[in-house]
Image (cartoon, rainbow, N blue to C red):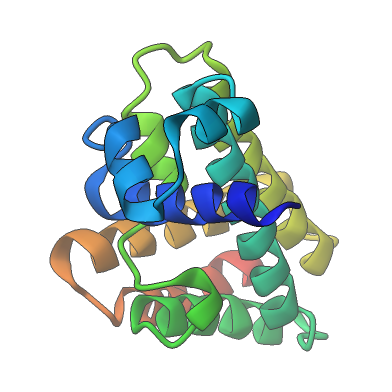
Length: 183
């Protein structure tokens, strides 16, 4: 990826994640990045295309990070502890590749979509499906209902950490997740 495209994606992500997609205009991205408008439109046809690129970039980074956190777990107990421990590290800003914690970029981005059929909204859903698939891989043999419940705990912990600055929200999910698995 060329340097200017990378700079535009990185700048747009930082601004969108901090301020919201609809609150950030192209001119602000250009000002912060120092890139000319002509260059931006040579790289991206629209703001939506740039937003989609930021979602794709965040998806890849998040999944790579989450897999590295889950991989050492061999038993269900370890995987659950690794999952919610990883979330706690993220909430406490101990994961440099995920930037300062400001909630889930995909939840925030999807909330700003006015059309649930839009490519941006669909990509946010696909991200959540990929996270669920990754958990299914490390919790093989666990029912689909249980995977859904663990994902719900994960999402709830993320929202609680963001809205209430509850950095222990993920840790409190561990006993519940373990109890669900043992049922």
